[in-house]
Every structure is written in C-alpha cells, then in structure tokens.
Image (cartoon, rainbow, N blue to C red; front, side, top):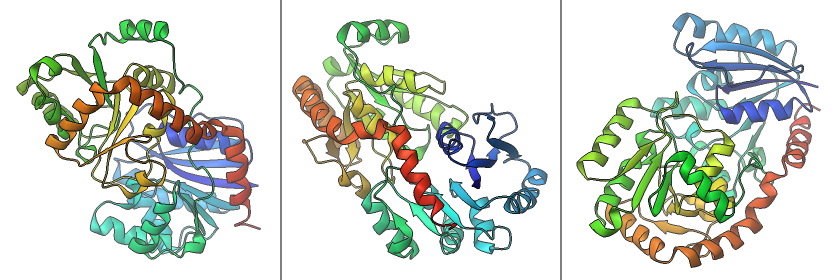
Length: 368
C-alpha cells in the first residue's frame, strides 16, 4: 500500500514518516524554508519532495505536486493542517483519495480565516487521530466534526526511548556539560513564540524573593528555525531587566539532549495560551521532571490531576511565582510521587513499534 504524507520540516514529521515507511511506501511532500536544514530522512521507501514555504512560485507548484502524487497513492496522511494543505483539501479538486489526519494542537487554532479553511477541510477528511478524548470534544464542538471520524483510542505520537530518569552521578556530568550549575533549573521547552507564554514564566521568577531567585536558571531552547526571533529577543531583555538568569541554548535539541535537560530540571513549564496534549510534557514526566501546567487547557486534564502527577496553575505571573516557590520547597517529595504516577501512564508511549502497528492498521481501513 502507498500513502502520500503532507507535512512540515520538523522532527515529529520525520519520526512519523520514517516509522510509517516500515509499513507503507511513502511519497512525502514537505514544506520548508529554502535555507532550513532538511529534517526528513530520504529512505528506500520514501520519495521526498520539498516545497519552499517562503516562495510564492514554489507554493504555486504545491497543488500540481499533490495532484501528481494523488495518481500513484492509495491515500494521504496529513501531518500538520497548515493553511496551504487546508485550502487544497477543502477544495477537493486536488486530493480525491482517502485522508487520515494526525491532529496537533496548534494546527486548528489559528486565525479566523485559517480556522474557516480548516473547518472546510475537515469535512473532506476521513479519519482524524487525536491524542486524548478532550480533543474529540474540541474538534466536534468547534469545527463540527462528527465523532465517528475521531479516533482517540490509539497513541498518536510516541515518545523516544531516550526519555528516562538518570542517576545522580549522571546528572552531575550533565550539569557540567551544559554549564547549568544553579541549585534549581526550570525548563521552558516549547517554541520561542508568544503562544507559549515564556514571558509569564520570566515575570513570575522576577517576583520571587532574591534569595530564591538567585538560585534559579530558566532554560529555553531559543530560535531553532521556528518561532519568533523578535519575541525571543524581548524575552531575553525581560530577563535582564528583572535580574532573572536565563540560559538560551539557541539550538534544536535532539531527544537525547532534551532528556538531559529534563533530568537536571526541577520544573517543566507548559503554560501556553492554547494547546492539546504536548509531547514535551510526557517527555519531562519520564525523566522525573515536575510538570507545571496551565489549568485552562482542557486536554491536560485527561491524563493529569493537580498534585497527583502535576501542578496546575493559572497563567498569570503572580500565580506561577507562588506555585514555583511551593514546588521548590517540596521538590523531592513531589518528584518521587509524580514520577511513580506518571511512569504508569507514559511508559507505554515508548513502545514505538506497537504504536505504529496500531496506527497503520487503522489507516489501512479507510482505503479498503
């Protein structure tokens, strides 16, 4: 069986495309900036075509590339419903094959015009995989997607085996490697963009007493080809203005490197404006890092309970400051308890082979 994959140039699409190619022949059409490094591996069962997402001329070729691919595939797998893909799927002129869609949180919550096209596109999608049940309600209520198109019983995005808990001697080596020597490291792992409210975290730490604040380093990954460079620069300025120690790694971290930072971090902060179930939360949990989560995100409540396996917080600087102080005072006890609870939930997310067996078997059904 042969499938077309429509995606963006990132690690998640790379992983999904590579794993799906173990079950199907894959023709992948990837949107990326011309200057970006290619993140998708060209393998025996993957035919790759890149479209420059910043070139109007290149984008005008996208419909023809998809139409050509449509002639030789049995169906499509959409791995990011950006505006371009949504427009072409909504038209139904270009894609006339069954479509499965792996739904991300940020795909379906953008501008009004973007959401309008997504709503139209989802009418022409045959199967939508979501990570948790609340996403089904969101897509049904906000976009009018029938529940029988929505699948939440399968794990959609597995977690790399690199994410595991290290012992104290390993953590000391990692601290030296990354030059992170403060008593407390707080990791804000999401893309450098205002959507993820990193500035609220920085403001929150600035509200702490000086004796505690001086022992904290906030770690961000920086501008990695995604996000907003102006926002990142402003974020660093806020840190300087408020005497908050910020470490900008300024690189795209591998899973192994991400695991290292989680292992030496006391808190993994995810307080975005909107989200679904972020894989960065699961990754941190498997490394024993305490998740501090935005209480207003419905998807977080499917697998997390306050003070059972996470700490929920209102996305306001004062509230975040209060929770950070409480976590750091109770860190050892919380870490052990949370890790014991989270390992029960998320360890199965690392069974990659089984996850993709289930996913591909379900996808096959839409073309039979």
